[in-house]
Image (cartoon, rainbow, N blue to C red; front, side, top):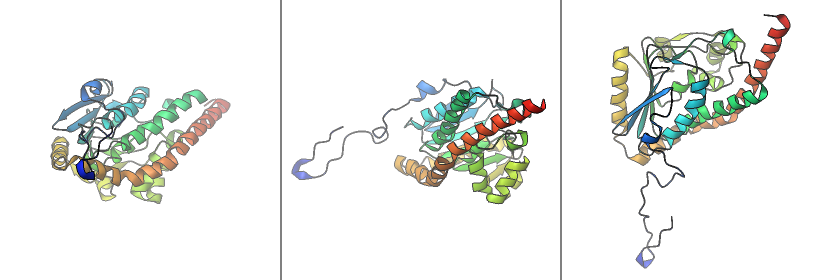
Length: 282
């Protein structure tokens, strides 16, 4: 939009809404709130709560959320009416089920290309949401537990646990972002141990080691998340957005460097595991 200079050569302020002018496309809640099978959304006073689920119960990780969540995060990030986002799960677990050798993907190169694309945008679109994010981890996070850890404030219930059940211990390379976030948050040695052994970290240890900021009884988890969100939402739009941008910049840079590489190696390792399985008949 062109803005004519003010009289006398003074700088003018363009008469458009700063919350929308900077985006090429703008999404509105009514366009995407009911668009996804695995995400339930509700918003009050600019605070958007997204609840991950499968048929109303705890999210069961699979092809549907892997396809949907990258686009859902894009829509959320394109809506200037979102001021704070809360991410939680339905039921008694945040994400499941535990990974098994039988659940290893059997994909052709073209199918892995789809996985590669979705995997990159799953995390990068989450990080591109330019408002503060709060995760309320309601129970065990057994699959893609890096998602809530990429939020700015991480709360966990007393029942929450963390495990990478879907990768190394079941014959897959942990290359979909787990290899970035856990060594970053736990330290290099603890992070590698976690990924290579299938270690389960309970809520108290997660608090002690800095994965989460607060541990609460499950019935106090969402009220605390909303109280924090209301506190954050008092700031101006630019302070909210640019604080998130600034505080995620380092993570985005590292993820940009390592995520695609990790996903490519995960695909190659999967093919090797399947070849070995075929040759041994196991």
